[in-house]
Length: 449
Image 1 (cartoon, rainbow, N blue to C red):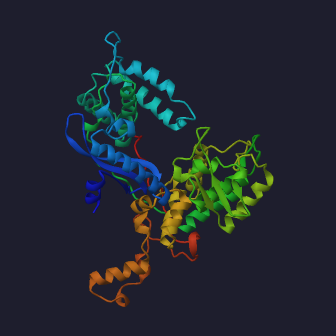
Image 2 (spheres, one colour):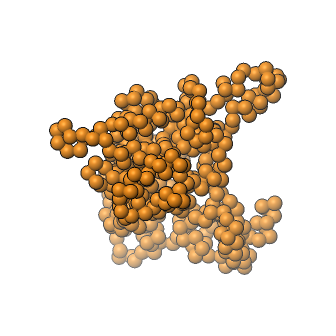
Image 3 (spheres, rainbow, N blue to C red):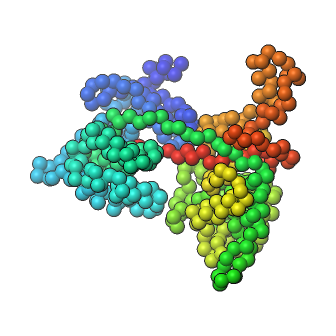
């Protein structure tokens, strides 16, 4: 059906696995070969956005049928933009080396237009991995062989495949793409470089008892605040840990909260910003701009902080009255697990994984959970799909395979979701606060390509 529509309309709109809209059409490359194109947008698949996208698709389709379609006019940063870019450079203008162009390019990467963490990664990748090997190479001479040699060298240094790909297919690719956009005659061999399929580790859940012990640790622990033996409890640390475990917020979102973002009466938190490396930026994605619903218990936990601070103050502050740094709080979170002998050690993102996996296990709606966490439904299913099943459903379906009745199978509790190769204890509570929780999956995409 989609192919018939495409043939009739020349360009049509479809939904990506992440729930975004994208254009699909067939057009010719500069060499005359016709190819199928797929150009994603940042628009969520809503009725209003779909109407807008379909209107644009009609214009694109009309140009394609008339043979006057200008790819770069519609998609200047599209997936195949490098095929259509025509670098022009004055004969007397020297072609810069990678090192020379980098020094000029990196000065344009400033906050708030670029996330501070992204700029930090750009600088680290070039200075530690790229410039020493390719810095004196002309941007027009970069070849597939150079990329393969650089990759081999980085592998020999023992770097992870993700770090290597982020450096080459993320940072270096981004710079060379911008060189083309500035009409510098840069080579662009990146589409030819093949990468192995990534192995994404699955969740390794906390048990509810482990989570509760961690929260109790933060609630009762005394923290050093000044002199040699000057220690006292710090309620904000406990409140932050509780909020992360029971809202599914990202750590950078939680530490960026101001008192005015919380409505105890409505029972919501409005996510408007993200704080990382001491800088504030917009949330990670458009979907991450959201209202987070709070349980009654979380409202009670946050109430003392709200009463102590003014509307514009940071909600979660450290013992010095400064905004909590996620990296520093991760150290405290890790120390808590070590003190409680919780293994394996998990990072702060485990709190988000905990919330999602537990919610799915208890039958929470995928659509509601997507709105709550800012994670697309397709992503939830991809990484947490095994938590959608209930123990009774698993037992019933396995009974069909075994050729036996549901009644004759072992206790359905044997099929409950468990930690990786670990037995789970019987959770005596119900709802979001009970059951088995999940650890971080570590899935972060490589830098934009």
